[in-house]
Image 1 (cartoon, rainbow, N blue to C red):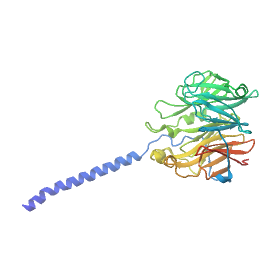
Image 2: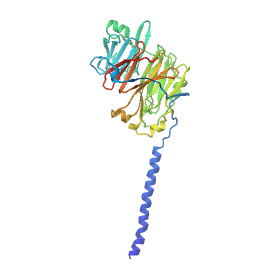
Image 3: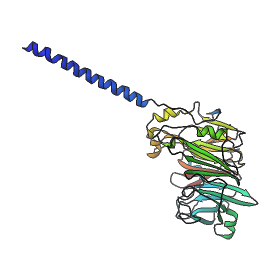
Image 4: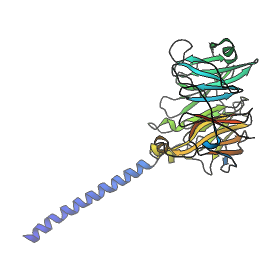
Amino acid sequence: MGVVSFNETTPKKRYTMKRIVYVIVIFIVFAGCQNKVDVNQEYMTLHDVKKAYLFPEIQTLKRSNMQSVKMPDYYLKNFIIVDSLLFVDTNQENGLLDIISLKSMKSYGRYLDKGKAKGEFLYGINLTLQTTFECKNDSLYANIYDSGTGGLFKLNITKTIIEKHASLKGLNFYSEIPHSAFWAKTISDTLLLVRNIDEMETHQNRSIITREGIQTNHAVQKLNNFEIPINEDFNIMSSLISISPSREYIIEAMIGMNYINIYSLNNNIEYTLCIGKELDKLSDILSTSRYNRKYVFADLRTYNFGFAVLKYDITERTFQSEEEYAPAILFFDWSGNPIGAINSEIKFNHFDYDELNEVLYILDSDNKMLKIKIHII
């Protein structure tokens, strides 16, 4: 009887073991398929790709060699230097924009308010992504896009300082700005570049708005073709954008990838600048958990001699947990050639360079502004 019992139960045990092994194999195969990423295009790049990975050190920033800048007692969301003026985004409900003299560090007044009323800004202002400064007829202007309402406004800075109240008027373009546009820059009085995310959140669309309507060019079309999978984080496509003082170049520095796109709207120039030996792949990013994805560039500024990016090159987890990391500012000429790097022992999130007086300003992680005299070029 004992033998019979053994012979009857053995097939059942074998069947159970086979089933367990089968389930494990299926799970491994399924997990493997989940890690495989099917993408149509690995890079949001342009036709020519240049690589830069050797940067002469200009200087290393230390608290001991920097001077503290006395600022008003409010939160400094961002700042930008134009000519002899320092513009500060205060992020306050009233007085969003503080206009300060760089020479005396005295304020010419705080202007513009948050709100839904005419001439107010629903979500505040963004000095780098949604504001364009221009000099015209001996006056300085700031063209400001309100992403909350889709409105575009021109602030006469010179008149505002003289009259001590905001000289603001609405701007109308020949074609309607898409309602979903989250970014807009005026290239001229008749040329506007806007960006928006499509309904499926898989493409980022750039549109050139002119007298003749909405247009495109080779560089814009190529960048617009970049696609991420449905239900992925559309911030993968995010980039910092700026325009050269000459209005000739558009610069897009990817936030989560190690390259920068430089192009013109008249098709005279278009190239991608890789900061490293190999371009970051979309498939590698998609197969990485969101907290372990890269945070590469944190700020972008343009100058007459070229442009500069604030490079973090850390993971999102490192940034969110406020761990120690060493940022650097990389400087380039307009051909993409490295000028040099300013390394730092200080964590900071914004910077700008006063070309006229050769002074670098940074906004550190404690919301304090610091400055130092540095010769760049």
